Picture 1: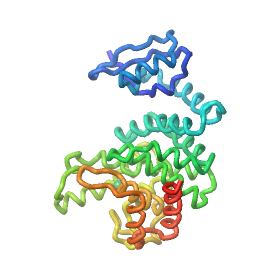
Picture 2: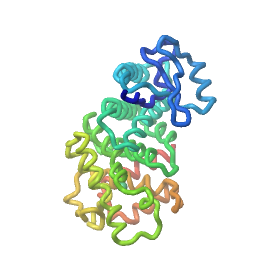
Picture 3: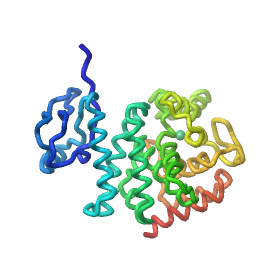
Picture 4: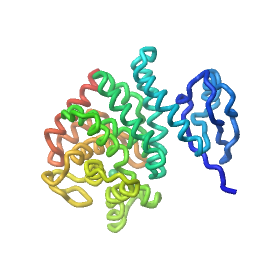
Length: 316
Ligand SMILES: [Fe+2]
C-alpha cells in the first residue's frame, strides 16, 4: 500500500466557523495524528488553542490539496479586498500565508507542487504593496532579521518588488516575476552540502563550489519548468557586480540584466542587515552607507532609488 503523504497548511488560512471538506492533521514527533475529521467545524477558539500550544501548522493529505488550494485562494482574495480587516492585519495575514509556501519552496526546491500558491502569494504581496505607500513598511516590520534562508528569500523578494515598483515597472506581471526571482535566487544552495555553507576558512576549490550556487538556482528553476529569462537572469546574476568583480561570470554592468541589477542590490542589503553565525549585522543606515561607498559594484541609479526607498522606511 502506498504511504499517505501530507502537506503543511497555515492555521489562519482556514475559514473559521466552516467545516472543511477534508480531515486535518497535527504533526507530532514525525507522525501525523488526526486532529479534525472532515465534518467538524473549525472555530477561532480552536485556532487560539493550537497557537497557545505552539502549533503553527496543521497538515492535510496531499490528495486533498486541490480542494484546500481553492478554499485558500478564495479566502486570501476576500482578505485583501475586505473592508473588515485593517491594513496592518492584512500585512500579517499575507506574510504568514506567503511564508508557508516560501518555506516549502526554499527548503525543498519543489516549485511545481505549489506553483499556484506561490504565484498567488507573490501576487497578493504585489497587490498589497501597490495599495499604499505604508504597505512596504508594514511588511518589513514583520520580516525576520535573523539568519535563515526562508526569511532571506522573502525579504529579497519584497525588497525587489518594492524597488522595481519604484523604478517604474508598470505591470503586475513583471512585478510578480521579479518577486519570484527574489524568492528563489539562492535555491541552488540546496545542491551544496550544508557543512560547506557554514564552514569557516574555505579552500579555493570550496569557494568556487559555493560560487556556483546561482547556476544551480537556474538549474532548479528550469527543472521546475520555469524558463522565463527575466526570472532566470535575476537568480543567475545576483552575485555579479557592475565593475566585473562579481561571480560566477564576472559580468560587466552592460551585460547584466535589469532583474540582475535589482537583485544584486536587494540581496546585498539583506545579507548585510541580518545576523549570521559568524558575522554581525549592520544597521539599515550603516548598510546603505557601506553600499554607497562601494557604489562601483552597483547600478548607481538603481542604488540611489533603493537608498531613497529604505530611508523612507527609517524616517517613518
Ligand atoms: Fe546567493
